[in-house]
Amino acid sequence: MTREARSSIRRSCAISVYRWRRSRADVSAAGSTISSTVYGDFPIHSMSAATGEGVTEWVDALTGWRGAGEHTLELDYDTYARAKAALGWLNATFDVTAANDFAPRAIAERLMAEVQSRCASMSASIAHVKALLVTEDGCDRIAITNNLDPPRWSGDAELAGAREASLIVNARVQTHPEELARIITQSIADTADQFKVAASVKHMESFSPPAPKPRFRFSHNN
Figure 1 (tube, rainbow, N blue to C red):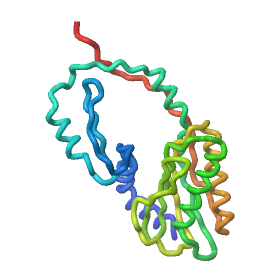
Figure 2: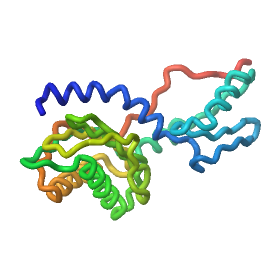
Figure 3: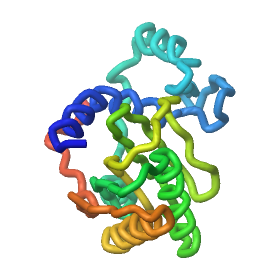
Figure 4: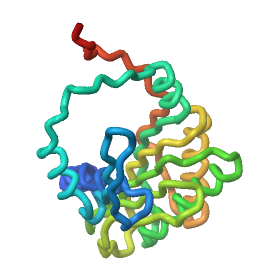
């Protein structure tokens, strides 16, 4: 597959990334169990972005509520900054090539298993590790959101055996950025060895986000 073909497929798949991120951000801690309750004076609604369950009720609550601006939140930005800094953030792109056909989905699943195993061995909690898999047949997305559960595919694309594929990886893990880069790099290498393919990292960046610096703050009216 030529570079132009890969770029074309990536562009065609890019529109699905936003939907994928929303679908992975399932607000309901209880999965498909949707409930509403109240914490203090504030209503709490659970919902699932993956299924859409509870979203209509949430929107109705937002549009029907007339209490906006009545409460000013006291935010501890130092605590917020420490929480963000506890996670290593990583973005990476790599290509997989081979002389013979390989199973693209199996490679992506093996990569997730390698990352999960390494994180578990060093007690590094996974917030999420996502990968967009692209072949000449199309694309699909796979993700893990903890150290135990198996990876989940966002779609059911039938990706035939291929000799070339690309993966775009996005990770948030409770470890130092340098350690996260090492985990992903080793996981890619070991996955490539197991499938007898060549893996070439085209881009990788790993970092901790800077502390938030809000430009505007609400204040109480005297």
